[in-house]
Length: 244
Image: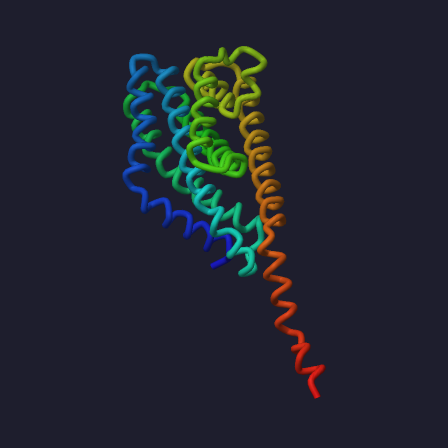
C-alpha cells in the first residue's frame, strides 16, 4: 500500500467515527432538494449545493484534525503531496459514494433527458468541494471560523444571480451551467463552460492547498529542533574528549 493510500485510510477511519455529524451533513442536501421538489432544475441545483456544502464541511473537519498529526507523519518520511493526496482521495471517495445515492434519487424522481450530465454535475461538485474544504482548513485556525466562512460562501452562491460575471468567481458556478444544459436542453456551450470552470477551480484549489500545507510544515520549529537533536546525538560527548 502506498503512502497516500495509507493517509486516505487514516482519514476515512477518523471521519467514520463522527457518524452523527456525518449523518446530519449528508442529509442536508436532501432537505435542499425537497425544498424545491416541484421544480426540476432548482431542486437539482439545490441538492448539488447542499452536497457541495456537506463535502466541504467534512473536508474542513478532516484538514483541521490532521494539523496535529501532519508533523509526525512528516518526521516519519511522508511528503506533503502524499498527505494532501491521501486526504483528498478519502474525501472524493466518500463524496462520490453519497453523490451516487443522490443521483439514484434524482433519476427515479425527476423526468430527465440528459441523466449523464446530472451525474457529471454531481461529480464536478464533489471534485470542487473536497479541495475547497481542505483549503479552508489551511487558511483558518479552527473549525468554527471555517464553517462560518463556508456558510457565507455558499449563501452568496445561493443568492447571487448566476448570469452576473462576478458569479463566475464563486467555486460552484460550474454546476449551474451543467444543470442548465441537462435540464433545459440548451446548447453545448453551457457544457463546455461548466466543465472548464469546474476543472480550473479544482486545480486551483488543490494547488493552493498543497502550497499552504508545504509552507506550514516547513515553518514548524520542532522539525528543525528534531533535526538538530538528531545531529547532536551522533556526535561524541564533549566531556569524554576533554577528560584525561
